Image 1 (cartoon, rainbow, N blue to C red):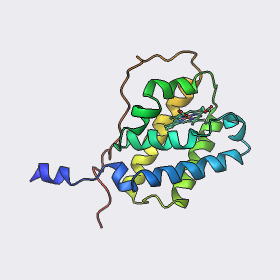
Image 2 (cartoon, helix red, strand yellow):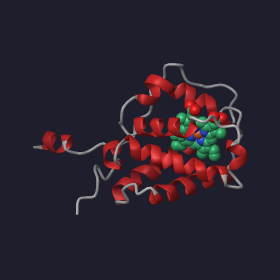
Image 3 (tube, rainbow, N blue to C red):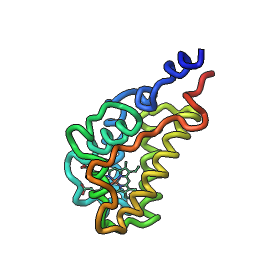
Image 4 (cartoon, protein in one colour):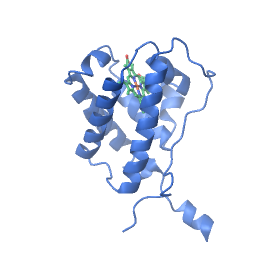
Length: 160
Ligand code: HEM
C-alpha cells in the first residue's frame, strides 16, 4: 500500500501548476523589483532573461523539468551570478517579502503544506545567496548537482 501512496504524491512543481505558473510568478516579481527602492539598485543590470531563468531554476529544484541545467545554467553558474554582490539582510528580506506577496497575486496554491515548503526553500536559498554574495569564488565543483526540494515533514499537499 505505502509505495502506491507515495507515487500518488505530486511534486511541488506539479502542485504549483507547472512551468507557466513559475514563469508568471517571477515575471511579475521582477517587474515589481524594478519599482522597488531597496531592490532596484541590486537588479539594475539584470539580463532580460533573468526572470525566466529564475523561474526555470526554482521549477527544477521543485522537481520539474531540467530546463535550467540543460540549457541555461547550472548550480555552479547560479552561485557564480551572486558572487561579489555583497547582499544585505535588508535586501534579502525585501526579496522574500515581495516574492511571497507575488505568489499570492499569481495564485500559487496557498495550502499550508505547499507554502511551508515554498517558504522553507526560499529562506534556505536566499540565505545561501547572501553568504555566496560575500565570496569571490564558487566553493563547489563545476558539475555540482542542482538542489532538490520536497514537501518536508507534512509529506504532501493539504487534503481536505
Ligand atoms: C532561493 C533564492 C534565490 C534563487 C533560487 C536565485 C536564483 C538566481 C539565478 C538562477 C540567477 C541567475 C539568472 C541567470 O542565469 O540569468 C540569479 C542571479 C542573481 N540573483 Fe539570485 N536567487 C536567489 C536569491 C537572491 C536574492 C535574495 C538576491 C538579492 C536580494 C539575489 C540577487 C541576484 C542577482 C543580483 C543576480 C544577478 C542578476 C544579473 O545581473 O543578471 N538572488 N539568482
